[in-house]
Structure formats: C-alpha cells, structure tokens
Length: 541
Image (cartoon, rainbow, N blue to C red; front, side, top):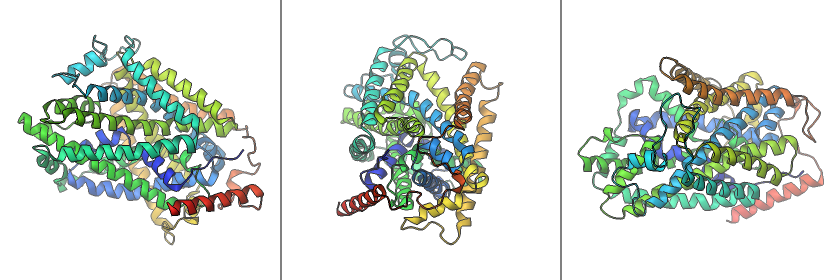
C-alpha cells in the first residue's frame, strides 16, 4: 500500500508547528517564566531548547522517516521489545484528546461571549456556576468521582462541533486534511495573536507588565528548580514524547531535510511562546494598574488565566473590549484545534499502519470512539475536576515517562542513536554533530533523561503522597496514567508474534541505516520523481 506524503516541506512544518503551538504556549509559558527568574529564565530555556528540544525533535523525526510508520510500528521496526512505547504513546494521546476537546469547546463559547461580555462583572462565579456548573455550581469536592454531576448541553454542543471539524480533517487524510487545515489555521492564528499583542501593548500599564516579565532575577538561576522548569516547559510544549512527531515525520519524503525542519519547528514554537508572554504580561500590567495591586497578584496560568483573569481584564478595557476578547479566545480555539488534530492522528495512524487497514474506515472508528467518550464524560458539572486530574497525571507520568523511556531505549538499550544521527544527516543541509557525536549523546543520552528523572521523582512525591492527595483523586490519577502504560505493555505482548502485512521477515535490528526502500523498483523511481517534482515546486514557491 502506497504511503501518503506531505505535499511540501512547508506543509509538514506548518503541521508540526500547529501541533506544538497549543493552549500551553499561551497560558503556561508566561507564568512559568515569571515564576522562575523572569528575563533570566530565557537563558536556561534557550539551553533546554538546544540540548533537549531540538535533539528530541531530530530523534523523533528520524524514527518516523527511517521506518516510515507511525509510533507502534516504527518502534517495533527499531526493536521488537520497544513496540510497547508506541502503544503507550497512543494511549497517552487518546487520553489527552478526550479532555482537550472540552477546553477548546470552552474557548469557542467564550469567543461568542466576548461580544457582549456575557460573563458579567464576576467572571469567576460565571465560569464555575453558570457555565461549567449548568447554573448549579460544579461538584469540586474530592471523593466524588463516582458522581459526574448533571450534563451541561451547551458545552456538549460546542464539543460536538469541535469533534466534527476534527473528524472531517482526519478523514480527509494528510494532504487534503491535516496539511490544508494547517495552511489555514497557522497564518490565521499568527495574524490574530499578532493583532492582539499590538493592542495589548497600547494599554496603560503595559510597560510595567513587560518590565516584570523581562527583568532578570539572576540569583534564581542558582536553583535547580529553574532549570528543571525550563526543560519541562520545552518538553511539554513541543509535542514530543507521545507519538505526534514520529507520526508526522513518517509522511515525509525520503529526501526531506530533518535537522533544518527540527530547528524551524523548535524556534517557531519558542517564538510564539515569547510572543504570548509579551501579550499576556502587557494585559496583566494593565490589570495591575487598574486595580492598584502588584503584578505578582495578577499572575496565574491555566484555566484561571484564560477564563477568569482575561474576562476581568476585558471588562475594564476602555475601547474595543469585544474585539480583544474575540481575538484572544478565537486564538485559543484555533491553537487548540490544530493541536487536537495532531493528537487524534496518532491513534488513527497507529491502528491503520500496524494492521494495514483502510484509512477512512480506521479514521471514522477511532474518531467516533474518542468523540463519544469525550462528549460523554467532560460536559458535566464535575468535568473540570476530571479534566484537571487527568491532565496532571497523564502529563507528569505519561508524556514525561514515555519520553524518558524512549530516550533510554534509543540511547542505552538498542544503541540506535548513531543510526538515527546518520539518518538525519543523510539528507540534511545542517549536519548535526557530524564529527563529534558525543555532544549529541551527552545532551540527549545523559542530560535530558537526568532532568526528566528529577521531574518524575519530584512529581511522584507530590502526587502520590496520600497525606496530601485525596484517595479518590490518587486512585483516578493512577488509573489514568497507569492504564495508559498497561495498555502499551498488553498490546506489545499480544502483538509480539503478529507481523504487519508486508513486514520484513528480517530482524529489525539488522535493517540498514540507509533508506530501506533504496532499490530500482518502478515504485521507488516514481516516488523519487515525485520527490524531485515536489522539491522543485516548493523551491519555486
């Protein structure tokens, strides 16, 4: 079966950037930066990007393109014992997809609410009582996971529309769906957020906010927590560790430049985070000036920033308040949509590739299952609590855990890191550590797993402490994170002897480091011609 390719390298980069740029860029980075040294945080952040973010992107791009398969089959081809990593990543992506759609649905509703500031003078009460609580208030007490609360039709409707858009894009395929949608979404997002930032910079108090954001606290760099925070932000914001970039790279043509693409995606994502920080702190400075309080009292992240702090800010804007709100929440919606599309593609491509299934049928079934679970559980009074716990545990012990194991597997267990460097350098203009591969090894094989290990240990002490965390929250979190890992292990055991139709009988460890399809068949000649044609077309553009 012929594998679909990206139409152009630009299409792949836009899709990869669209996956990386999500809600976390807008509402997480500014607060993390401020709390870890302000302007000084940019130094460890840049070091983390260069020593962990870019090498990890190159590793995942190389795995995807070398084995031309999505996560489970690609990991199986790398080594049969590592297929569980791919299925673990599929489970992680599926968990994230079902609750991520809820947040996008909230942002979509708030885009509509922005026209007349429906949330009124008390956005906090509106969010938790009228909007999420269906007029009755949310069930936020611990120990009530056996009671999801009443169904909120308005949120379900928004989520249904979000899932419909995702379904149309995923079923349409890589070129006509994912690539085309990101050619629309990404320029739209950049334009909207750019206008938003320009408007924010004109507000009274904006300079005070920027001073708070950029003023460096150099003493903060002496603490290990700042460096851990920097690596954590890079890791979670680049969509690495749960199969997206492996899946996207599997659709690359064999002559694609991997290292330049990784650099482009990495710096584009970080540039958007910096832009988000400028915009957010400009409006926080305005809010502090209006309220007569310190900026430190305005800093928050996540749901509190987006759906409480920003509506409060919009309420006090002297002009164009509705436009400001529409731009902000529509930006959240578009950023979330592009990320959700990439997340859903992970399980779709995994089942299609591993079992050699029809794309449209697989896409419809996977999409339908995820949509039903999502709309069934999260548009409820207790949906916010479910979402918060699932997000915390799947990020801490899913994405970080899978990333840690994948790095250890490539560098220490299979020792395929040299092969993957050769794969990246084979067609890349920028040759990564061509003469001193030990630099790449030190960054990816030693430093990054060390930081991830510290992060996992720190999170485990906090989230698994029965004296701090309620038992029902702990049990639910363990079920979510542990269930994802268990799914990966079980799938690996069940499928260990099952060969994908057309899978090579040779041991995957004996596969050559060069492109395995380098033969003189007519199919390969046609693909090479397609590559050359596409590259000439891209150069003309």
